Image (cartoon, rainbow, N blue to C red; front, side, top):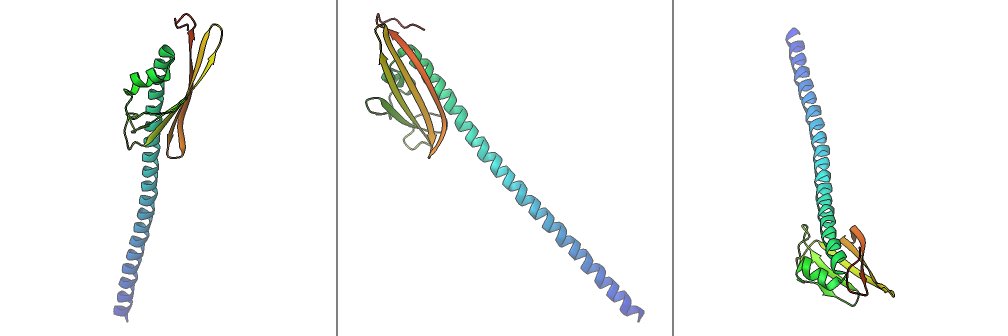
Length: 155
């Protein structure tokens, strides 16, 4: 009888060990899935942040050139060398890669529109920049430039 009790006790101890092992593996697999999800989310946020940061730098470059030239065509010639620019009367569009360099199959679309107000003393030009990725707006900026009638730029 005591041999039977010893065998049952050993069997119970082995089952308890395997049950404990299964619970530990379950805990680690759930923890791993949660951590993996957090890393994927962090990577996505990093990519979005990088796109936005590059769009901001690009917008600053365009705004600085535009404040000097007060002309949308000259600005695009200087900043993008007029590569891949789609033109209409008051709008320009270009496709950019994630580093805001012109690319035919880029991730970011830049739409630029210009509005001019002619006054007796000169022309006030307003430029609106809108960066989009897919259907989502990444960044937008409005800037202006004033060109007096005499031809000299006033700031």
